[in-house]
Amino acid sequence: MHTQNTIQRDIYAHKQDFGFCWGVERSIALAYEAASHFSDRTIHITNELIHNPEVNDSLTKKNVQLIEKLGEGKKDFSKIGENDVVILPAFGASFEEMELMNSKNVEVVDTTCPWVSKVWNTVDTHQKKGLTSIIHGKYAHEETVATISFCEDYIIVKDMKEADMVTDYIVNGGDKEALLKYFKNAISEGFDPDTMLNKVGLANQTTMYKKETRAIGQAFQKAMMKKFGPTEVNQHYMEFDTICDATQERQDAVSELVENSKELDLDFILVVGGWDSSNTAHLLEIPLIGGVRAFHINRSDCIGADNTITHRTMSGEIVTEPFILDLDKDVIMGVTSGASTPDSAVQDSLGSIFMLKNLQKEKKEE
Image (cartoon, rainbow, N blue to C red; front, side, top):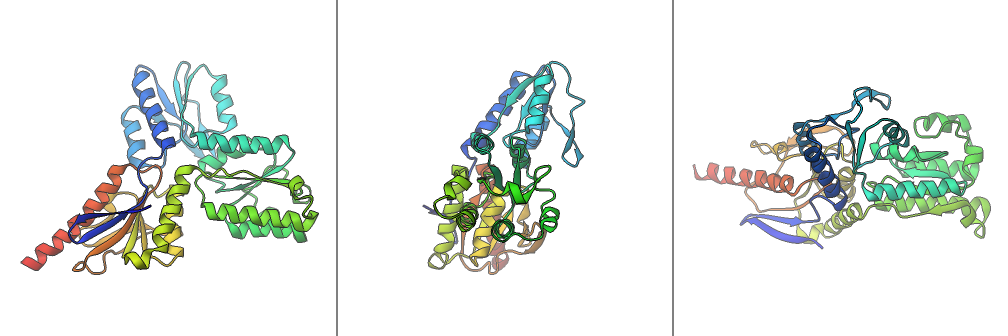
């Protein structure tokens, strides 16, 4: 449920779920304690802890060294020495990286979110049952990179369009080489769609859009029913719900805002979170697809004193445009944030809107 808060007499904010989720809070607590507890040792982290610049910057100030990326998914682990401390981020680390850490004489602090571990258990079940893992996610995302390291056979689909391409091939066949070329960065080595798509299991990056994951699952289930018949579908398709609770709750809350936007007379929905945060990006998609004006900002500085807003679009472009269309009227907005966004970032963003209204009042009084 949303709650309406009057920020000031002419600003009304319908606040939805925001603040750090439990998994992120746990990761931050572990990482900060590691920085304090092992302050006399060299500490490394294999990736950004979470998609939040303030938290990652604070770890750097605590002398936590980010492992250098070399491109093409490679990292430089040569600087990790004996008796160093290595932090694994909330997204987890690949199986190969964990094996490498085990081979070195280092202390490992694993902050992996338990929901991510749940996905790893799911794909492990797929492998044991001889299934190819269909992963709803983004092939370059840190979490998905870690997940596929636990798979033997997999294909990654980022949206319904790509899922339809795969299910159409399952049912009707088609141009094998064209399919392999399209998914070249999103399939396991030696992937053969003619043999590896007969028995599949669905898993997902935990931050993906829940409704789309469900639709993708239904599409694969229908494809298996068409190909093998309704009595055999359970032998060819398996599904587990691996969308994390915090992601699901935020998506449901924003969906509720969109459904009631006319009744609430919303001017816009403000989404606060890292620009490289997948779960935050999906929160933006919901209102925009629903026809509600919305903005994804990563910090309060994105709201300018000249009444402009710098924000990330659905396509990933960073643009600046006019913000509040009529500063003389009451501002009614919805507010939410990504699971790795602190409460303070939301409050600071609301403070920037408060500033705009006050500046407008001062201009009128001059």
